[in-house]
Length: 171
Image 1 (cartoon, helix red, strand yellow):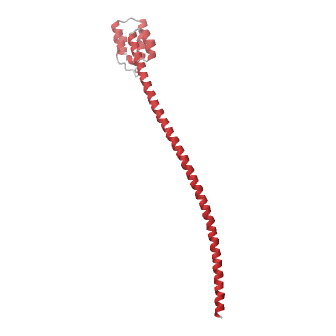
Image 2: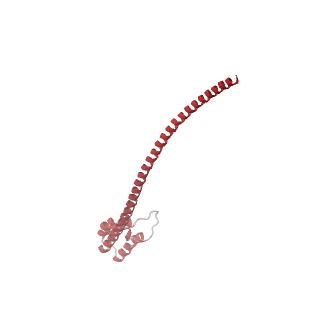
Image 3: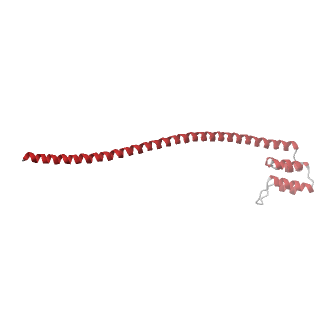
C-alpha cells in the first residue's frame, strides 16, 4: 500500500506526467489484486482531480469503481451538462446575432446592387445621349465645313467679279 501511495500521491519525475484518468486506472487495477484501508483509498482518490474526468469516464469507469459516491458523480455530470447547455445557448445566441447581421448585410448589399444597377443604366443612357450629340455635332461640323467651302468659293467669285468690274471702270 505504501508503495502505491508513494507513486500515486507524490510527483514522480519520469518525464511524463500521467493524467488523472491514467492514475485512477492504475489504482483501480491495483485494487483488483490488493487490499487497502478506507482512509488510504480516500487519500488516494482525493489526490485525483475529480473535475478532470469526462462524462463518459464518470458514467462508466469511475461509477463502476465504487470509489466515489453516485451522488457526487451525478452532481458532476449535471454540472458538465449545465455548462455544455450554457455554452450551447451562448453559441446559439451568437449564431442568431451573426445570422441577423448577415441578413442585414445581404439586404444592404441588395439595395446597393439595385442602386448600382440603376446608376449603371443612367450612365449608359448618358453615354448614349453623348454619342447621339457627338454624332449630331459631327454632322454639323461637316455642314459647317461645307458651308465654309461654299463661302470661300463665293468669296473668290466675288473677288473675281470685283476685279473684272474694277478693270472695266479703269478703262
